[in-house]
Length: 122
Figure 1 (cartoon, one colour):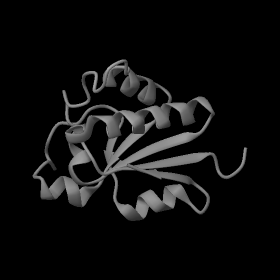
Figure 2: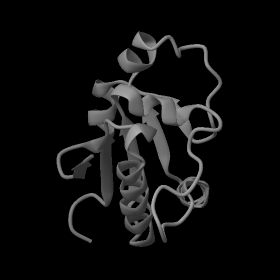
Figure 3: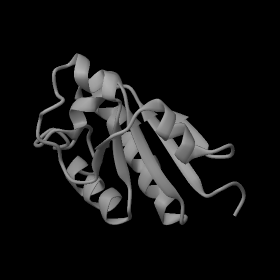
């Protein structure tokens, strides 16, 4: 396997653009099927995806439900990392979060990524 086997997906859009959320989860679960470690780093309004009852529904005709993709992602060891500045600026610091979700800043995110992680941005 080339590289360090890690994939980082930066997602800056929440359910206001559900198709970007869907594509991020599709890319994430496909990478996991290839044996890669995957983290989605949520910034801007995407941090709301870490709240209960947000990652739900079918966002386009013929697309899989977000709940199914989220379950696959979490079961395969994926984590949704929420930008702390974005969380705090939206007053979500004390909000309940779904499993496999953590508040992680830019420095620890890059420490995890290292020098040869594949990065996608949506």
